[in-house]
Image (cartoon, rainbow, N blue to C red; front, top):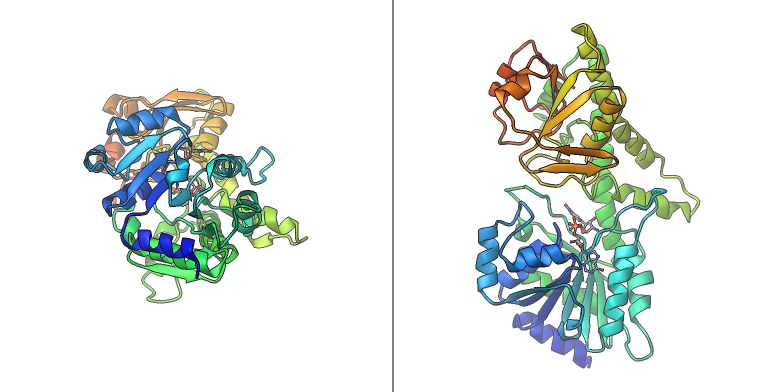
Length: 436
Ligand SMILES: NC(=O)c1ccc[n+]([C@@H]2O[C@H](COP(=O)([O-])OP(=O)(O)OC[C@H]3O[C@@H](n4cnc5c(N)ncnc54)[C@H](O)[C@@H]3O)[C@@H](O)[C@H]2O)c1
């Protein structure tokens, strides 16, 4: 009879389990809110004091949770926020949602996971379920998290339970909210998996249990590698179609009418965000240990990474046709967020596009309703107002993100020339529009 397992199980089923979420970003904050919404007592920990202050003041910094929603949930008294790990041993469940970026040489940077796990290890002694949610390569939960936390006095399956459970949140997706997306769970042990399945059944409709934490880690990498490769294919098809004088957007729209065997993916100025450009590289790095080169993955990554430069070369071509060069011309960029309707600039292809235009001597101004300023890689710009004058005074309008709030017919009417990399101007017929 495993007393700690039974006690945790009872607390989970009665919603008396105290949940701590570490890392209150695009993934962690929605979890903290969802657990509290379902009656659990939640503590959110984030080392970023600005975020803690904002949350305490009912100010949301992510587009998927409104400040009103936050105010409601804060008012329930079920959720609290802190930048300290001091009270962490009171938690019955700890879920880690910290970033997993790439280092300077494009190797996995597990610094944030390492520091979170070390902080937990220093403070815990009571029984717990530990959940790693940050995307990472197969083996991290088992080899790193468990071996750091376990010792002679704190044993796996006796004192603590450990799982990997990836997140599939799609920022700005209005159709699939956190509770609608099936949750994959893989336990390091059978009992660990069982507890996590019970826990997530309390807040999401469907839980999919796989046989191990390594499998769950691989599921996430397969999903995001699938996207990276298919976006790479769409990007290559866009380059091919342009050379053949064919409109790729029309091709994809027709191809997707096939009721089976085809999933539409769309080209664009590159890939961005904290997942698609990074996660496949985690797998590539991991496989080097096995002396295996992930050719397919690397090819897609190469094509996607080249897209910002392809876009600028297309920009140069269309301006050339008008007797202009990028040098000394004014380029007005619409949208710099990595995808539509989000306020996330991480890994956005707008950065290399802007760098390349500046490198060629062009002048850049941008507008993005969600990104007030850019300070990255030496690019320092502030979003300017989207006015008739700003558009008409520019030599070319470059659409990099197809935000829904844009009035595309008005944009086209007031621009001299438009390079549309996202088909935001779909359905508008005007000789000034050039599509990717
Ligand atoms: N953003 C997405 O759409 C998405 C989707 C699925 C999975 N993921 C994965 O989820 C993980 C988190 O991504 P995110 O987008 O939420 O990142 P984020 O940067 O928005 O949030 C992470 C938070 O963790 C905090 N943090 C860092 N180290 C900490 C520590 N030691 N203790 C406490 N807080 C700490 C940071 O201050 C930050 O607020 C990543 O592994 C990512 O790959 C992200």
